Length: 138
Image 1 (tube, rainbow, N blue to C red):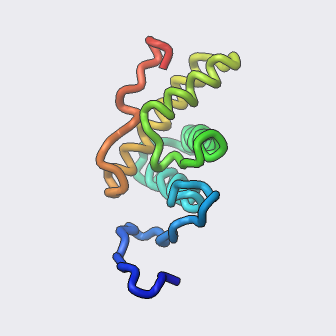
Image 2 (cartoon, one colour):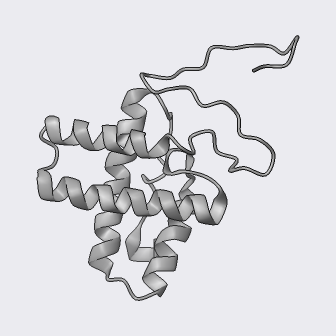
């Protein structure tokens, strides 16, 4: 419940439940707890719109959930609010661990689809995956 006298504003939700600010010491990203729902909605839209088939959808989901998990553990953020620098850090870490360039290429394509979805839904104005370039190491 809001403190007496605290301003109350109606957040944009685009069909997703509003998340209250987290208590001190919790993950800083207000999308924590809802980011997986956003990823799932994106997967549904990609499939229904014919952008991806079932196999590509499953691969895209794996990439985005892995990214979301990594961001929550590494930065207390989610895939919804990631920056280009954080996406690069994610890719570099896994490439250094020996994952194939094919994996990274597929992960970047999944990120690009996800951020295009977020822009279309009005959740983001920018696309942090737009500038990812694997030819220069992410």
